[in-house]
Image (cartoon, rainbow, N blue to C red; front, side, top):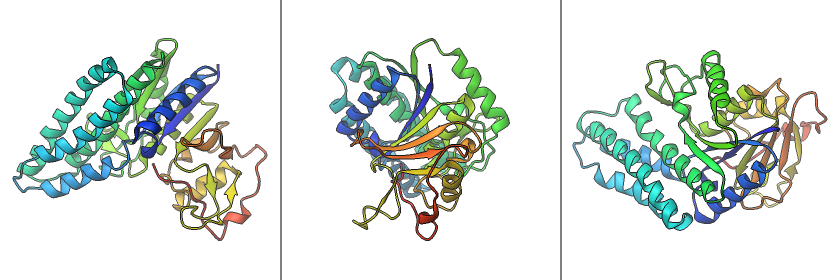
Length: 319
């Protein structure tokens, strides 16, 4: 079967309706291909965690309210999206990861916010999203399991903007995928990596896109779908310009160059792993899954020139 990587951004896992749509999208994809899912934190959660670290930094203040804010966000999402049994199972993960967040934030409050502690706190958003999405997929009768990318993506120790060691990461991803039981749908935390000593790192804002690109490249995926809140790429920001025109196709090498310039609304390195591969990329809307979206095609494929994008940015919503 072909292999498809489906990446869902924060808006796609940040509300009950969006979660339901995402689960249906994955179920349809899993009927036709092997599927690996990559998820961001629920929309706004990474900002909430970053604010908590900044507010508590060496102050001696109580971390409890900050932990409760994150816990309540995910508890509400789970209560709205899951059955009673699914909610009961998810609450185990919710308790584990919010307890870990509490320990990190108490350390931040009592001493200072090192870059490593900040990454440990920010990682909790994705670590709560993955088991939530996996629990929801299990209710659609898929054999889904959450996977922590920190044990698969090896990086240097530049916390917050870590660089990936592809020579270590690609073999780890391939070995992990080969070891999966047949039919399983893994739900991988985006944005996270770890050093060779096991310390958690993050890849920079929008880093879940980068994770998805790494997974797709390492596994030789036929297709990477980036699901967000905009139905593809546009020649201007459609939220600001009602006359913005859709860009239906773009060559992958051109798209990667635009991403590195910050002009595609995704992580600047998100597409770099895919340049020179045969993987196709499609940008689609979770809220409008039947919309055509935009295709980013391998360099050897037939794609429209990107001349119209040269003077103005192309836009797709950030995760």
